[in-house]
Image (cartoon, rainbow, N blue to C red; front, side, top):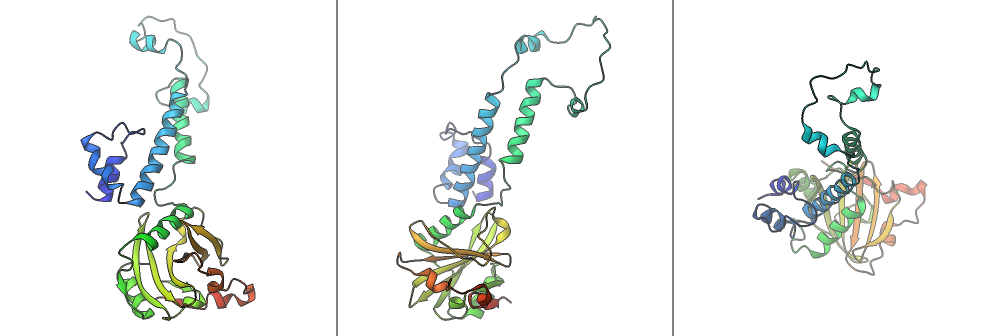
Amino acid sequence: MNREEARLILRVCRPGGQDAGDTQFAEALALLKNDTELAAWFADQQKFDALASRKLKSVAVPPGLKAKILAGAVPVRQKIVESPAPAWWQNLFHPPVSWAMAAIIMIFLSLVIFWKQPENAARFADYSAQMVYAAVNDAHHVDIENQDMKQVVAWLVEHHGENKFVLPAALNGSNGLAGCRVLDWHGRKVSMLCYGLSGPGHVDLFVAGAKVFLDAPPEDKPQFINSGGMPTASWSHEGMVYLVVGHSVNADLRKLLQPETTAGAEMRLFPRHFHL
């Protein structure tokens, strides 16, 4: 079973774990243990389902609704009473529905619009946490070992990774370059460049398209935080998002990226484009 097949099954998995013992869900649920992206997606799905369930349960059932349903059809002989023309909003529902049903419909639409985000949208904090995990814990650290930047970029092109990037001055050549890797994030490809530098030590640079994020980092202004216990630096530049992960708690990423440069000296930070 692949990830997409698991998603189709997990979409109908009820929140609360009541389906965990069902053999139809067992294989899909088992994939969550080794697939962090699928696990994050499933957690979001469960949150949405739980919220929708709570909202629907909060709608009061009109008095006598059950009796009216069980009563069946309306008697044939009724006194004909001329009714005023329905308001414009009443024409939205064909056939007319009860206030309770209308409320349920409006709640559901509100949840879809304001809660449910596109599947390819992501929070940068989640992305950062997963890339740090991949950098530190994955035994398969790089897909290819190569110290030549042009050959690395050519390999990224061949494997559909991000390759039109602008590198910081300290990482703009083959100095310290050890290899690269292509990862998946929300259906998009992420490129990773691995460096072994004498000063800050081992660092990994991740490059992804900015459109996938709901909250991409600021343009050309590196943000320095700890993620997963490791120092990171992140910024956006020309439609791409960059994340540097240091493999030592003492890694000085500020010095590596020279944040003290002024706006007029911006090209020291971003001196060259690398793409084919």
